[in-house]
Length: 67
Image 1: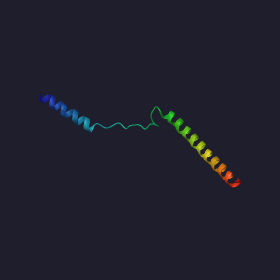
Image 2: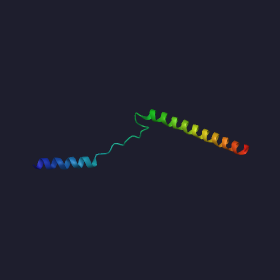
Image 3: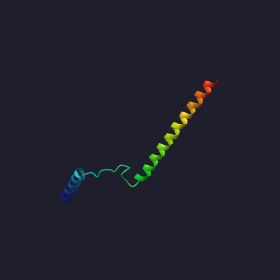
């Protein structure tokens, strides 16, 4: 019985003091290249939305000035 108690205590101590492995970020993991592609696609989408907004503002400005 003592043996089991000592084993449990040792297991708990080992578990408590065992160094944790650092969790890699998504960019560092195997999925990193896909995330880079996704970020580039988001940048392209943002550029498109900005260009669309500028075009809409220009159309509004021209239609207001023409009236």
